[in-house]
Amino acid sequence: MSSPDLTDAEREAVLSVLNTPNLSMGPYIEAFESALRAFTGAKHAIGVSSGTAGLHLCVRAAGIQAGDWVITTPFSFVASTNVLLYEQAVPVFVDVDPRTGNIDPAQAAETAADLARGGAAARRRLPRKGCAPGGRLKALLPVDVFGQPADMDALRDISDHYDLALIEDACEALGAEYRQRKAGTLGDYGVFAFYPNKQITTGEGGLVVTDDDEAAGLMRALRNQGRAPGDTWLSHTYLGYNYRLDEMSAALGVAQMSRIEGLLAARERVAGWYAERLAEIAALEVPFVAPDTTRSSWFVYVIRLRPGVDRQKVAERLAERGIPVRPYFLPIHLQPYMVERFGFQPGDFPVTEDLGARGLALPFSGKMDEGQVERVCRALQAAL
Ligand SMILES: *Cc1c(COP(=O)(O)O)cnc(C)c1O
Image (cartoon, rainbow, N blue to C red; front, top):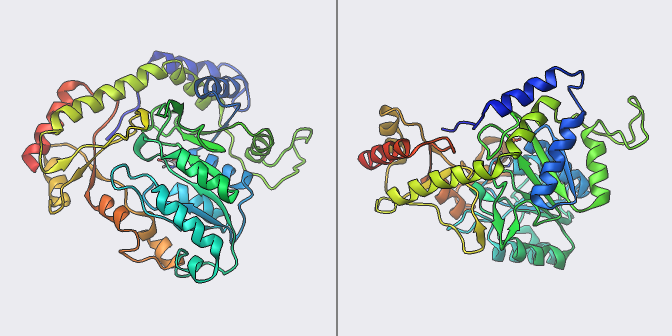
């Protein structure tokens, strides 16, 4: 489905770490954070062991606690919701824009208003069960789905109005731009992820960016077992975690960041080849790029089959031709543990469910050549 883009520069960087005694908390994590600060323009960058770890640190830094409500969407990778559950907070789902799959700001605003009103108005926005009355709305957690930024200015208006933290899950969107501003820097906190299928990889890894000095200090302490500045190795001011990014991973990240523009351009080129070849096929829709997305950053290439097309059958026919495809995303609210805990039902978020039922991720990486894209598209057309 995907393949990391690695060269001798990456291999040498990782090996060079092994020639030193510093395998954790050495110079490479600092260099990697510095590269991300330079790239995004954020004041602070905090490297962590995964995107999920980064999101969890943001939840802690935003002061989100047990019973607090956070507005987010079920059309995402599960981590964006799971980090709320780690703190016993309650995800208040709103549905997504059918074109982009990103949070619908109008529905987010209505939901925030209802939650602020309380009583029956709040009740109808909350999950059926698993959520005690008397919560407070603390944050918005939008996701930049498939590499396209959410409508962050509209969300900022909501967060300003209700005094909410704004956590941007930019784990799929390194390099994307919204109204000429970099994804990840559009909220109070932004998180990137570096699993091997992302725009850049560190193996496992993630990173938080923020302009907030106090939050950055807290997140640095929390990723390092709760050690505040001045704490010794065995004294811990906070309940923290081991969310550190090791030096081998950071060195890989530094090498990847040194060629970030080339990596993004290669993905853009592959997406362009797909768009050209697929535009004419009536049984599917190619990804929609919103006018506010002044720069796309392609994480995956997800097409939508027209209603009535049997996705399973298409996937099987492609598999027979040696071409892997995946349904994308399976809605979070219908995952078994979510149904059990919160009582969600099919039909609760119809746009999310519709996109989830029709979306098909095609093989995608910056290393694909035009011939490979051609082969996938021919096979897809034949399968349809
Ligand atoms: C990849 C991803 C994450 C974090 O992933 P990790 O595997 O923990 O690095 C979080 N949210 C979204 C939307 C993602 O795609």
